[in-house]
Length: 125
Image (tube, rainbow, N blue to C red):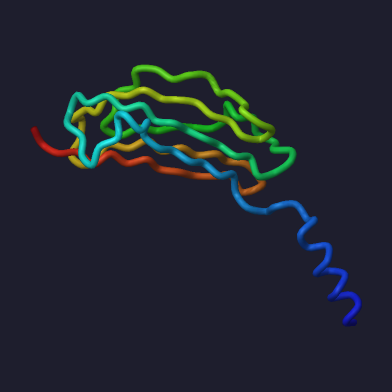
Protein backbone atom coordinates (compact mmCIF):
# COMPACT_ATOMS: atom_id res chain seq x y z
CA UNK A 1 0.00 0.00 0.00
CA UNK A 2 2.81 2.42 0.87
CA UNK A 3 4.43 1.65 -2.49
CA UNK A 4 1.23 2.62 -4.37
CA UNK A 5 0.98 5.92 -2.50
CA UNK A 6 4.66 6.64 -3.13
CA UNK A 7 4.30 5.98 -6.88
CA UNK A 8 1.16 8.14 -7.03
CA UNK A 9 3.02 11.02 -5.37
CA UNK A 10 5.85 10.69 -7.88
CA UNK A 11 3.48 10.79 -10.85
CA UNK A 12 1.33 13.66 -9.56
CA UNK A 13 3.53 16.49 -10.94
CA UNK A 14 3.49 14.83 -14.38
CA UNK A 15 -0.31 14.80 -14.58
CA UNK A 16 -1.91 17.52 -16.74
CA UNK A 17 -3.09 20.70 -15.04
CA UNK A 18 -6.77 20.73 -14.30
CA UNK A 19 -7.11 24.44 -13.61
CA UNK A 20 -8.94 26.98 -15.73
CA UNK A 21 -7.39 29.07 -18.48
CA UNK A 22 -5.66 32.07 -16.96
CA UNK A 23 -6.96 35.40 -18.27
CA UNK A 24 -5.20 38.61 -17.25
CA UNK A 25 -6.25 42.13 -18.19
CA UNK A 26 -4.53 45.37 -17.29
CA UNK A 27 -4.57 48.96 -18.53
CA UNK A 28 -1.58 50.06 -20.60
CA UNK A 29 0.82 51.78 -18.16
CA UNK A 30 0.81 55.27 -19.73
CA UNK A 31 -3.03 55.40 -19.58
CA UNK A 32 -3.44 53.88 -16.08
CA UNK A 33 -5.23 56.07 -13.50
CA UNK A 34 -6.90 55.67 -10.12
CA UNK A 35 -10.17 57.09 -11.50
CA UNK A 36 -11.52 57.81 -14.99
CA UNK A 37 -13.79 60.48 -16.45
CA UNK A 38 -16.37 60.04 -19.17
CA UNK A 39 -14.50 60.40 -22.47
CA UNK A 40 -11.17 59.04 -21.19
CA UNK A 41 -9.49 56.51 -23.50
CA UNK A 42 -8.02 53.26 -22.19
CA UNK A 43 -6.02 50.51 -23.83
CA UNK A 44 -6.41 47.14 -22.13
CA UNK A 45 -3.72 44.50 -22.54
CA UNK A 46 -5.31 41.03 -22.53
CA UNK A 47 -3.34 37.82 -21.97
CA UNK A 48 -4.81 34.34 -22.13
CA UNK A 49 -2.68 31.41 -21.00
CA UNK A 50 -4.19 28.10 -22.09
CA UNK A 51 -3.44 25.72 -19.24
CA UNK A 52 -4.34 22.58 -21.14
CA UNK A 53 -2.05 21.17 -23.79
CA UNK A 54 -4.90 20.71 -26.23
CA UNK A 55 -7.77 23.12 -25.59
CA UNK A 56 -10.92 22.18 -27.52
CA UNK A 57 -11.85 25.87 -27.92
CA UNK A 58 -9.84 28.19 -30.14
CA UNK A 59 -8.62 31.53 -28.80
CA UNK A 60 -11.21 33.39 -30.88
CA UNK A 61 -13.91 31.75 -28.74
CA UNK A 62 -12.94 34.09 -25.88
CA UNK A 63 -16.00 36.29 -25.33
CA UNK A 64 -15.94 39.90 -24.12
CA UNK A 65 -18.74 41.98 -22.64
CA UNK A 66 -18.51 45.67 -21.79
CA UNK A 67 -20.21 48.07 -19.39
CA UNK A 68 -19.94 51.87 -19.74
CA UNK A 69 -17.37 51.51 -22.53
CA UNK A 70 -17.42 52.20 -26.26
CA UNK A 71 -14.96 49.96 -28.08
CA UNK A 72 -12.80 51.86 -30.59
CA UNK A 73 -10.90 48.80 -31.82
CA UNK A 74 -8.93 45.71 -30.97
CA UNK A 75 -5.92 43.91 -32.35
CA UNK A 76 -6.08 40.32 -33.56
CA UNK A 77 -4.94 37.61 -31.16
CA UNK A 78 -1.20 36.95 -31.31
CA UNK A 79 0.42 33.78 -29.96
CA UNK A 80 3.60 35.09 -28.28
CA UNK A 81 4.69 31.63 -27.12
CA UNK A 82 3.00 28.23 -27.12
CA UNK A 83 -0.33 28.56 -25.34
CA UNK A 84 0.06 32.29 -24.49
CA UNK A 85 -2.04 34.73 -26.51
CA UNK A 86 -2.22 38.52 -26.32
CA UNK A 87 -4.32 41.32 -27.78
CA UNK A 88 -5.10 44.97 -27.06
CA UNK A 89 -8.54 46.54 -26.77
CA UNK A 90 -8.96 50.31 -27.10
CA UNK A 91 -12.08 51.82 -25.51
CA UNK A 92 -13.60 55.10 -24.34
CA UNK A 93 -15.29 55.49 -20.95
CA UNK A 94 -18.99 56.35 -21.39
CA UNK A 95 -21.80 57.45 -19.09
CA UNK A 96 -24.36 54.93 -20.38
CA UNK A 97 -25.21 53.61 -16.90
CA UNK A 98 -24.43 54.47 -13.30
CA UNK A 99 -21.44 52.66 -11.85
CA UNK A 100 -17.97 51.78 -12.99
CA UNK A 101 -16.87 50.79 -16.47
CA UNK A 102 -15.63 47.25 -17.02
CA UNK A 103 -14.52 44.65 -19.51
CA UNK A 104 -15.41 41.04 -18.76
CA UNK A 105 -13.60 38.18 -20.53
CA UNK A 106 -14.96 34.62 -20.45
CA UNK A 107 -13.73 31.34 -21.92
CA UNK A 108 -16.09 28.40 -21.75
CA UNK A 109 -15.05 24.82 -22.42
CA UNK A 110 -15.49 21.34 -21.00
CA UNK A 111 -12.12 21.64 -19.22
CA UNK A 112 -13.27 24.50 -16.95
CA UNK A 113 -12.70 27.66 -19.04
CA UNK A 114 -11.68 30.97 -17.48
CA UNK A 115 -12.95 34.41 -16.40
CA UNK A 116 -11.49 37.87 -15.74
CA UNK A 117 -12.82 41.38 -15.10
CA UNK A 118 -11.01 44.68 -15.62
CA UNK A 119 -12.79 47.54 -13.79
CA UNK A 120 -12.35 51.29 -14.29
CA UNK A 121 -13.50 53.42 -11.37
CA UNK A 122 -15.50 56.35 -12.78
CA UNK A 123 -15.77 59.80 -11.23
CA UNK A 124 -18.26 62.48 -12.13
CA UNK A 125 -17.01 65.52 -14.05
